[in-house]
Image (cartoon, rainbow over all chains, first blue to last red):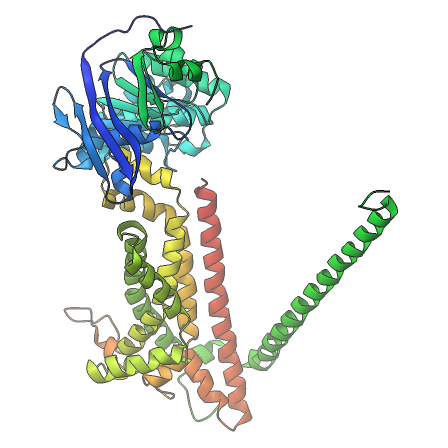
Length: 261
Length: 308
């Protein structure tokens, strides 16, 4: 089953000639691709192809681990700022772009504290506003009914799938322009994974999503656009329906038909 | 017939290997019992000879020429004051250094050198700290033979312990927890204050308690910086009846501490003073054991709270 027609072609972000290197080895070679608003864009490719590295460029996660050099740009619209620019503070970027990680990583605090944390560090203290936001985010993440009676209990006591939804709610609470998902279902059991996938498809109504996935079926089921990367190069980018049924590049075809990867 | 031999040969070989195993098991057990017996006999001997002197009076009397009247009031108050100053110096400095090295500093040749030297500092004989403190605090800063000097000296002595345990505690926090905080737009300080410190405080507290229990037992550096061996008065009280109500005068008062009091009594010729020394040793041992038990309790509680 392949996701049908893409919904919008307004650009939310755009990667322009991005090259990224750790020390001296290029991990990403001159990639350009658009991210369309209210769509899900999937990054696929074999291990080590640079898809997670590319994702982590979007919220400047690499900056945490020493001086890094980004060549090229990632434009964020409609602000039209280059989020890789030297003059842009990575913290400002992370305020606009949320992220959900491979392994569910709730803070060892209560569910309420987890979800309100993003707002608290933005200086919001008003209890009624925080309460509303926590409820709203949990509803968006499809978790409200399950946890509304234990908001002040530890998030660590939830199942893996529920923890991942807490992480999604935590990222949503700050109303990000763009949500980055780094293999959000790979550490979950099939039921938890199915829940998350369903949720992601639902979420694109309100937020633009860029998702790394190892699971080709997941990309085909959920993504509107798919980018296939191989050894740091973007081999092919297009609507998922085209990539998965009629790829233009031989390498893409070999990968999606399971000849390598 | 293959290279590896018959089944019976294989069985024989397994038998002999198992025998080796049991030899080592017996050897290990014997060493352990040997060490424990020596330790226990020391403690029991001290307890038997010192037990009779343990009473409320012993805690509430000053040392005296008459062994049956002598007590450890000035010694335990002194120990408490010195350890308090030690804690005030070493905890903020040590925890801050640990945080800096783990969360802020760039990993390069200089931080490597600093790291190795901190580990070396932890192994330096304590008397060396005493000599250094004599030069710096007593002669250079003219702090005299005071509680402040002693606290500063012991503070420096236990600083490496606190730095190392702080770093270890911070390192047990998985990086994906840090990344979760940063990904929401938190600054480095927000991440440290809201996450790193609370989640590592169990480990840090354990390190602090171990460091302070080491400080309580130290003697050599304090002899060098001039702890008195006989003192029959208490430091100036920190609380006054008149404004400004608090006083830091006690910091510059002379002092003695428990291990030095003990050392003094042991070196007297009269048998009865040796009994006093044993009783002091017993009190000191109890204090250290209580501190260590507190460390274990704290560690256990935090380990239950934060599972990764």
